[in-house]
Length: 389
Image 1: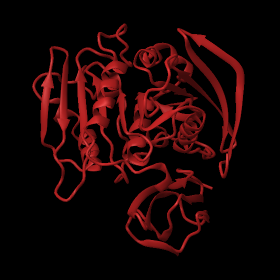
Image 2 (image 1 turned 90 degrees about the horizontal axis):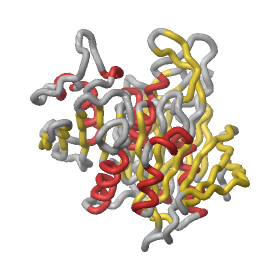
Image 3 (image 1 turned 180 degrees about the vertical axis):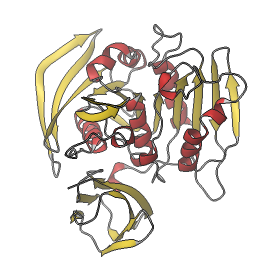
Image 4 (image 1 turned 120 degrees about the vertical axis):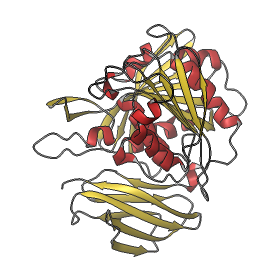
């Protein structure tokens, strides 16, 4: 596969399940051997190709766990779409004051909980997921306008990061028990519809002296004001909402654009008496897979703006990194690149970049930087996190 630092080892096992086909792939990306499960439905691809849904596990989980419990593979057979269950790598992080080592996707949920000692060489999980999507598109008939992602907990934080940085690939995302982290917030190049759900008994969101999230009235909007407002700013939305509710759910739809902004809808749902879990219809009387799938289909059917294709994208990776930064443009020309620190001071300007360009920024201290790129398709700004060398 041209120009991809990607080595693929197909496992010899091809497992039959309910007439579906399960592929266990090991993929070497950025010198790390990664695991991913892909499930192809038994039916022929629909006109335009199969839709694709990625399911991202939470902390300590893996693809196999959510292949078994999420309900996505069964729905994929019923609705005729491909399901994808990748696994993250393991990292050291601090939880409840204790250093732990377990699986986590690399996003703000991991990066704001660093362990003591030597800094870790974090990889770019978005780059990994892009390579998985590319491999699936090269191997199967795929509808490139219907690629979606769902996630749980740390995996839900990851799908919010995808909404910020990979809206050119994913058409919509939806997650449970995880939010957009401050370190991941930015102005997306391509905004996409996003849905977050949280249970009223989810202990990850409780603040003393509360023992449950407030379900009465609309007080949850005040309780989670910082979290919700962060997402509204990134989506280009005002706080104006419409609400739908049942005896066990409250769903707020934010769909009013800020003046001069091209927005995409954001939905937030509070689920009564649900704990920190991904509901599958058995552990709670709601199936996240089913409600999210309907949301995904509506998002494509009601879209008013064409999502930029992958050929027009600018890739900046790894992110975070210790200073060696790769910038890749496909079928477009980068006219200029400017790098700013978090105080807004311009540190570097580069004119007329090649299609693939590598920068050595190890001389800059660790922190948050903003990379502004000018191309023939327009301008955009992306956040880059510099870690210790």
